[in-house]
Image (cartoon, rainbow, N blue to C red; front, side, top):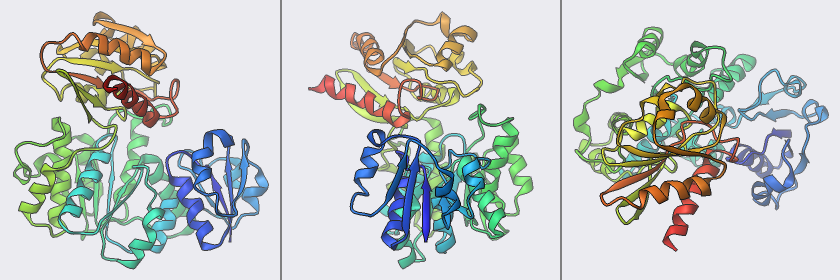
Length: 436
């Protein structure tokens, strides 16, 4: 087949698709608006395959002449290039079309990565053979052969609103049912991506597709709020509310801080029980779960100061939840790019936040103009992680009691960084410099 991969990307999906089809012996074209310098790490992993690259541009003939185009979630369906294609799939629909493993699918504004990672960890510790992929930057095509070889092994998919919308569109165009999870989870619906949706309801509608193909034999976990009750009324599946799941499943103390994290780990533990794991093993596995990179990730301690990397907190509500996870003094690095979200949480930062170091961005500018943040002790905005970290460390290093230096931006990253992972890595680099 002639395959065009639209968007090689930096987070795994395009790379995995190109690798999968190239290994099959298909004729693969990769097209990306970025140049070879930016994409060098991914291209280097494909160097032994005869892949054709069209970089810095898209050409209609690469889409028109392909048997199938593999779409990047960031691309809109009204793209003229996709309109020229005969067939469009995603890495996830390619995976779902070929496998029949039991699937747990998780979506939500925040908490989905912690939930799927905790579930993967617990199932693995309990002797299952789980596979984890999706929005967590691991394409399911990386483990498709293992899943096909063991059709009883559980598959866990983290799905963004974009990915769910893509699956829905592919199902519609091909008149097929691809996503039918035995267990589906919607962690929450918060104001997110409102720069790309007409309303919060439109955003929630994409999230709701996660249960559209479920039946009464399947399970759906939802939050106990207005959206959760709306989902429960619509779904045909068995309904469970996240805050009603018994907390005794978990040990009293977890490594990952915060009540919101405990709720997500509790959800994962319950799903593991449904998968046949015994309660004692589940509790023991949950106690050893260390969390997810860039999500309230403990990066070590210097003197009395412990560093936490929460770079994946790309919305104000997530930043506020991170701050509320600690009772000790906090030295906060925050700020970023606006997504047309409600910025009031910046005005609700708790009093134990002793100093705020602001990263420059459109959300930062709006927060200074519209919230009580301007009445709090802050410095910046700074135009680099190095400057913001230096300011936060100068304040935190004077602490004589246990304290936290927390990166939790509350906004996107694109004005200063490639993405939130680049932002998080730069924070980690500054910590390493302190330890040299």
